[in-house]
Image (cartoon, rainbow, N blue to C red; front, side):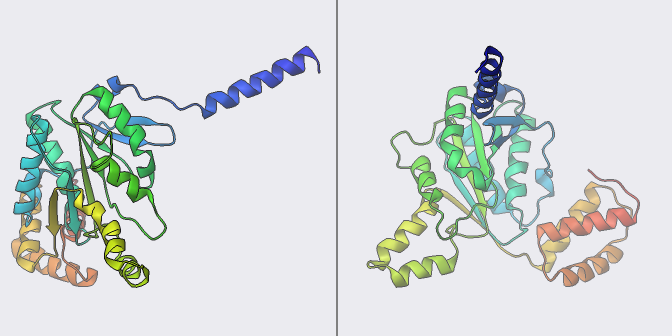
Length: 285
């Protein structure tokens, strides 16, 4: 092999090793913004300049959940004891909107007080690596996972259990974990019932599956809203964005909209508001 061929081979090897090497996310990156998204494949926290969220005052019909999560988050931001939180319940009921709105409100009133870092469900196995970055940064951070759930054969929930509570190293003091889910125990009911019917010791098998949700000290349930609450949501949106439309007009349209969707929820109310604003030629953001 000639010197030129050896050089080319070594260059290719070096390039391959560079691509395989993880890009470390320096803790200083957490000072770049108040919100981040974790990209597991590159092991970096990407700063988010503008978070897609609503004002806290616009969230209607979830007053108890709002107050509980806000108080818990403020205690954490102030360095006081606080609990991991699981927001569970009906689709479109405002779970993820509440997490982002609470963070936004606290950040607006106390700039730089606490960061929000989102980790995607499929990246949960990389959570220990992310926690290393967050632990080293010292900045108080809400670690947030939207639509968290586990299906049969998925064992990643076991590592999450150890991290939240019970592992040797555990969750860093400067990190709290918030998750939203449509499932109260993060597992489908048929998966739990299957464990109950096939295990040698049914109670122990079920306990293993549902004990993950026990790691969340704060449980907040979200349920389908009634028509009055649905109207209150829309009324708040109409007033906030200054839409020139009579109440009788938008109420009649809202009823038809919810019937065609087959449900009433915060998400459906927001989607109707988008439709209403569009028909009036009003831009909202």
